Length: 390
Ligand SMILES: Cc1ncc(COP(=O)(O)O)c(C=O)c1O
Image (cartoon, rainbow, N blue to C red; front, top):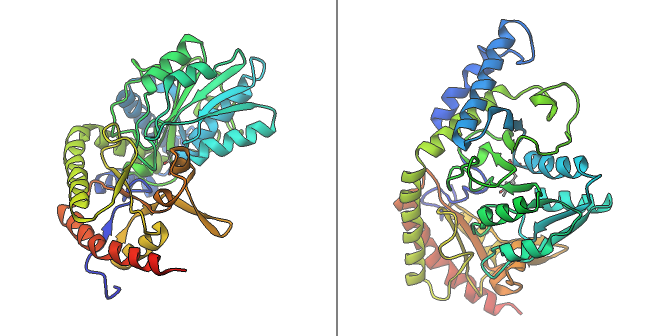
């Protein structure tokens, strides 16, 4: 342990989460005892297939959709890729225009950029200062060639929740498939696919206390989709590759726990996050909240500490055992705010001094109190050091 470190505090639950013990317990039999290939015809295969189908049933029940509408993938990135490339490539004869936003995850943005090289046209909608996409802008961007609308549900950096019900309704009026990246929101915000006008929805297991490397894509019946991974006939021909059976079992168990405990976690983690923000404002001057003040994921606190350098602050907190994220990235030698903060208009100091704190199932009041104490010490020091820099 570093001399400065008195505790270990993990406040980066949006990056990933530890696997819940209950999830691990559910997965373990599928590594050695029930290890068969679900595609095999014998009893080993059948047992593994039953586990995959039970997991599919669970997810379908939790999302209020059909089992045949769930496709297991290797995670959020693949789900986003399958949704976007899959629909784009299956709809070439109908048109070449895609609508998305400037605050999507790279799994969406970079996929769209590559599709542009293939001749697709993409509209990247701007957002307001809270990082929210305006449904009217979506409606205004629709052309007769539009074949897909993809808008993130809960933003991974600033936690802002987009009005996907309204956006989906607009898409539906025009008969355009609507995809949403719900990797950060699934299990935190209620989602009912029977009632919501969503045609494709991405989720990932490692954000909900499940294992890494597994996720799912909901594809509403009738949505045009071309596979991106070809091979065997797995997943109804939509995603080839031998199933990650322990991973899929873990994803379903993790999802079940998230939904069962959604109300209590929202209350408890939300209260801790609110306490954190209230105390931060009291104890450190000039702190600014990024993202929507109310309409945001309950575990997210994205704060700018003007006068500080976010990267240096992150490293200082790490010395004290506290793990957080920044809202910036080093691009060609100079520190730039992330694309999300830039899209929200935070071009400068407010963007480069932003830290993302994301709380979770194992965060305690003591963790927050310790983090506050450390910030109270480190932020003024860093501000002073920054001022002294030539
Ligand atoms: C909003 C969002 N989409 C997609 C992903 C990618 O998910 P995965 O890590 O499972 O590939 C992430 C992960 O950071 C995310 O936050």
